[in-house]
Image (cartoon, rainbow, N blue to C red):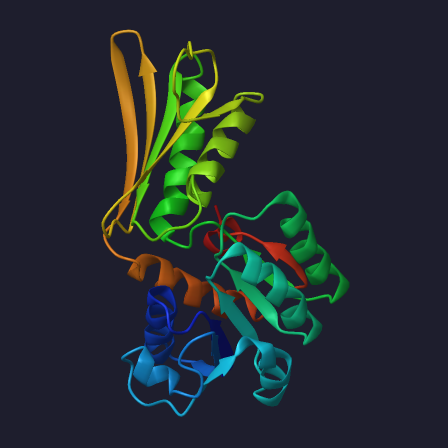
Length: 263
């Protein structure tokens, strides 16, 4: 049995992840953390039934992880919180599944250093949907044959998402830039901005959009659009639990969804 803890347990993603843990054989919810609903049953807050696992304050993370013999923690919160919590988790010898986006280079260094120094395993990915990771592979191949086109990325998310552009959009740009020998990025456009050979990245925020990503290859007289649309956050939650199962037996180091899917 793999003991899995969840941060942000009172949020929408946290609740979905807990629901998926409950439905997955061989996985148990060992602990839950949040800043709200402290002491409440995590299963009841997540509408997954009574589980006997109280939501703990993040300040008690080290003690709770040790007492519950947690193997893996899933963190889909915000950059500042993940950067603070990751070294604590790593210090407890607990493996990490991180879906948080919007890290600064300094924050990512802090997390990577904690993983390395404590000899744990971690998956850090901007998107845990299987479909999105296939989408990454498709645009990588397309970029090889469409290097002369103008490339634009348009992403759309719900109105509560804090970082922009999305980590998925940034990763898409990185993949294509690597294929094309290095490209500058332009984040939106305003005023006099003649187009060069950059990759344009545009963010839309509104309503309850779970996550849409479109890569547009625009040439003379034609264009190709490659799109992934998440109909709900379920795709991300299911992928995160799959990642927790995979990382439990992985050698120490930092991995991505490519490693899980064999892409």
